[in-house]
Image (cartoon, rainbow, N blue to C red; front, side, top):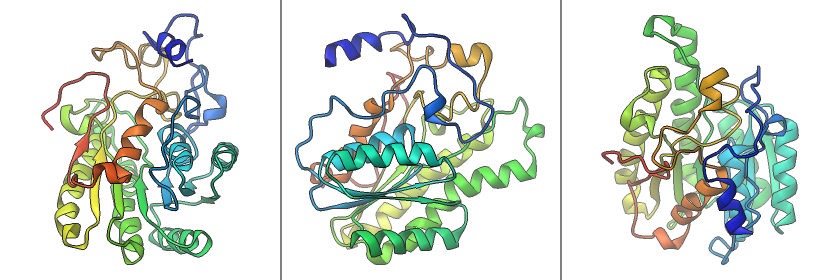
Length: 295
């Protein structure tokens, strides 16, 4: 099965139909064609997160969904936070529960500090504790020039992508014990930039600095803070952002000549969440299809 999966991923084309665009953001995984590989069906778990509780933002689809399912297979209970993609969130919940874990789903805007406080309180109240926080949700809006980025877009992108990490992490810290882990999703764009996603790339650079700085602050408490910087990954954010040739050729500019699948990214998060990464903090992992960055 794994070999067949790898063959299907060779170049992102083969017998797959052209990618279908979406008119709303966040995008919907249910409507994606081809459908992402995000259910970790070939994942071999080893109980690395047994009896842990994981809170994941943007956990309804894409990388977040794959991380939620992988953590559940490793023995963790999961809270999935999302904006308003209710059907996708319920799909994720079904997969998490099928893995034998408890799962709660919570809809709301992580750019709202009050929602972030309520999210943590609900997680601890219903699941009993909090061990791993995955700050994963993001939004992006391509523009051809800096002048086209409105103050409203700039504020919204920063509020969702980086302000939310301050809000949610601050709310979570009183509940995190020694051995806990915080994992932030940054991006390859933080390192190489993006001419169409200037504001988005700026937030991702801020996340790298946030990760490194917070890791120093929390080291004495035994709480590790790391990040993952994915390259091009086939998630709902992509068909809701790009169109035409940019969508059809998405991911083909990396050495592996294809976009990654969420299933290929999630193990990096499991590693950072587990004791396997007990001597790592302030670091960034780079599952990006082979692009060499100055990390």
